[in-house]
Length: 280
Image (cartoon, rainbow, N blue to C red; front, side, top):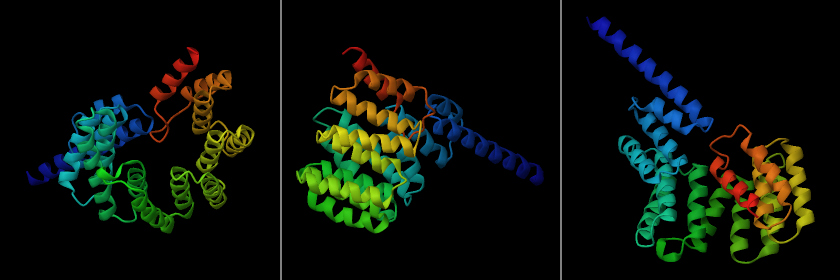
């Protein structure tokens, strides 16, 4: 009898693992609704995290926070769970009314700080906390001094990312030449990372240096031909600056036909931009 019970338990565990694996694959392909459907009967902590991530990607930040909290309650030393909680409350702050936004933002900061405290090597947590310090006003716990200190910690783990953080700080301080220098140093340290080239291309466009920006975008395309990230970044710059709109439309259509991942901008953003350029 005991042997039969052990066998049944092992089969159930294997079934749950297989379900979680298939749900993760659907998530990685940005099929968030299908992933949620598959996870409906799986209640392990790992499933709680993935369910929360699916809701987050679908824009339901309240429900995503609830699932992240369930996961974190079961594993309160997990830095990634705290990080996702910070992200969920950060999005809730961005999308809620002015009365509740400060409370949501404060909770986001607390979870980001907790994520870093739980794992000081968690680079995503360091970057997200840096972004909060850089963008949030002092009364919510933000500030350039805090961001500066964290940028140094980021540089200790990843020199190129450290230069990118310094570039963001310099831009906020209107030190535009310094910001550009920092972006170029980041690109030199990671010459094969298309994101570093895109950072420079977008910044040059922002400064009105279109010819140099175009050269950087071309460089990014050579690094990663048919890259969805390049399509989207270039199209967004064109639309924001009201130029090359026909090319922007073509790039967005290519983007929407691409195989995307959760790290890429959501399809909804590309569709919104496409409607915007179509109506112009």
